[in-house]
Image 1 (cartoon, chains in turn green, purple):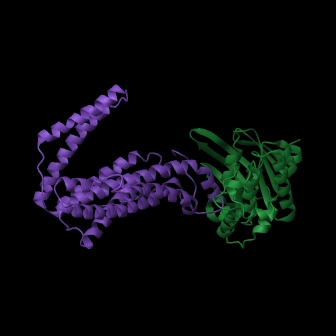
Image 2 (cartoon, rainbow over the protein chains, first blue to last red):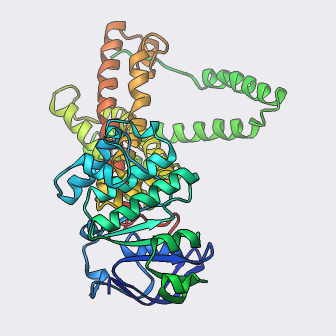
Image 3 (cartoon, each protein chain N blue to C red):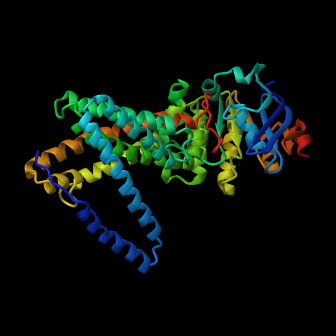
Length: 218
Length: 256
C-alpha cells in the first residue's frame, strides 16, 4: 500500500477538518473526491508533511510518515498546489532549482515535455505565462525532481477547457511513460474517472467510500 | 567645546508653535489636538527625565552607568519595535538581540577605531542615536516581513513542497524585508545636506561650532548609523523568519 491513514484527525482554528479519517491509497492513480470543505486538500498536504495531523497515524510504503525527514520525503512525494506559485525568473530557473534540490540531473526539455510544454518555454519569464501555462510549469517543476508519487490538488480548477485537456493529457501520458503514482484531488467526477483508477470519497472530514474509480464514481 | 545656555522661558516660548499645530488640527478637523497635547507633555517629561539622568551619568562618569542606560534603551526599543511587528510571531527576542548587537558592535567599532573616546559624553548620545535608528529599521523590516510572509504563503509553501528548507523558501521574502529596513536611511543619507539638515549638524551649528566640525561629526554619525541599521535589520530578519516555520519545515498557521 502506498499510503495508509488510520484515525487521522486535524483541527484548524477551532474547526475539525479531518475527523478520525481512515483510508488506504494504493499505488497507481487515486482520485480523492468529495464536496468542498470535505478535507481533500488538507489530506493531500498531510501526505508530504506540509502539515502533520493532530492525532492518528499515516504510513508511506509501510513506514510511519512522521519518521521520514520531511525535506527528503517531499522530493520523493511531490505536490502541485491548486494555484500556481512559481519563483521569480524563468521557467528554466524554476525547474533547475527543483532538480538541484532533489540532487537530480537537470533535463529541462524532458521535464517540459512531460508537463505538456514545448521546449521553448524554458526561457519564458514566469510572469509572462498564462495561468494554464504556469500550472503546467508547476507540473514540470515537480517532475524535474523525478518523484515516485505526485500529489495534485485540483490541477485544472483554475483553467479553461483547452488548458484542462492539455494538463489531463500530460498526466495520462505521464502514467504511461513513468513509474509514478498519482494522488489527485478533484471536485470534478468526470476528471476523477478519466484519471483515477482508485477513488476515495470524503465527506465531513471522513472517508465514506473507497474502491475502484469506476464503481465509486458510477 | 563651546556650549550654549537655553532658559526655561525660551522653551515655554516655543510652545507657541505647538499651539499653532493644535489650532490647525482643530480648524481643519484633523482630530489630532489630543495627540498633540499628549506628545507635548510626554516629550517634556521624557526628555527632562533623560536630561537629568544623562547629567548624573556625565557627572559620575563610570562606564557601568552608561551600559545600564544603553541596556534600558535596547529593552524599550525592542518593546516598541515589537508593537509595530504584530504579524511576526515571537518578535521580541529577535528584536532585543538585533538592537543589542547593533549597539554593541557599532559603538565598539567607533571606539576601537579611535573615532570616539569610551566616555559617557560620547557613548550616551551616540548610543542613543544608534539604538533609536536600529529600532526604527528593525521595526520596519519585521513589519514588512510579517506582511510579506502573509502575502507569499502560497509561494513559500509551494517551495517547501519541493523539499526546500525554510531558509531557501523564505529567502526572497527575508531579502525584501531587510531591504525595506535599510532603504530609508540609505535614501536620507543620499539627500542629506541637499534637502534636509540632520539633527546633529543643526545642533552643533546652533551651539556655535565651526561648520566644518559640524559636518565631519555629522558624516561620522551617518556612516555609523548606516552600519548599525544594517546590522539590526539583518539580525532581526534572520532570527525572526524562522518563527514562521515549525521544526519539520512547515509553515505555521497564521496566529497559530
